[in-house]
Length: 293
Image (cartoon, rainbow, N blue to C red; front, top):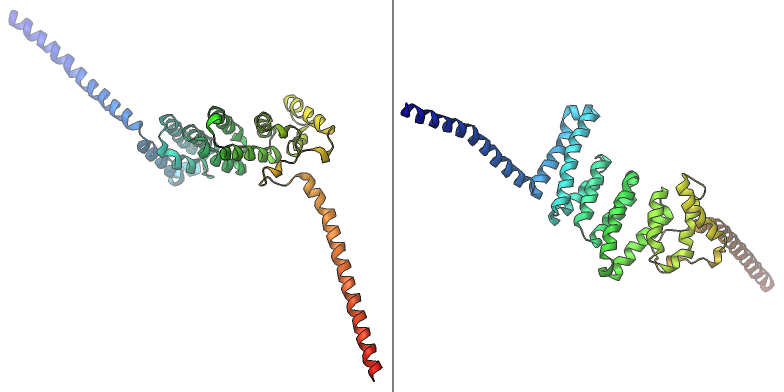
């Protein structure tokens, strides 16, 4: 009986070990996989593989839902790359954020990851490129929000050159933004940083959004229009003296036609004077020749 008791007990031990050893092995494998997932190289390989699949897989090319699912997984890995914070990922993330044949949500999250890792000097270059890409207009204000948080945190340590580059970018957005959301974010940012901006010709262009859109848009831009209705155009500050790379103002385009007309009239008068001068000279030469005969 004693021998049987010990044999039965050992049998139980063996069974427990037989169950737990594989489980421990699986957990160890999961831990190794998790560690691999925390590297930029592993994430980059999986993202590139997903993009290749979206381009070559017949189902992905035929059914939009399949392609969306593939990019959803790639997007999660782009987010993980941003959390990882490896600066080696910056060229990769910039490339993916500018990838025009990818879904906007994937590009948007690649841009957010880039801004999260990069410094302000690096980020402003990408933000400008994304602003110039019209296909990102629906997502741009969210990218701007994260970028401005970084700017606010680093503002005391920024160089004057970087500060002017950022101000120039947002002045351009004020003038040319296609949506009031983008223009509103730029206006709020500049108002507290450039004293002359409040009465500038550049800010006056925001009057184009008065009495348009939602109640919030109207309440934001109608006071700006009312402000500039009290300031004659000649007394508004033109910030192009400080930021020479800014685009033309609407009034420049309107002034272009009279200028062209004046130049045309001037050119015509010069031509007429030239013809008269040649004619007079020819007649004098002819009369002189006749007198000599």
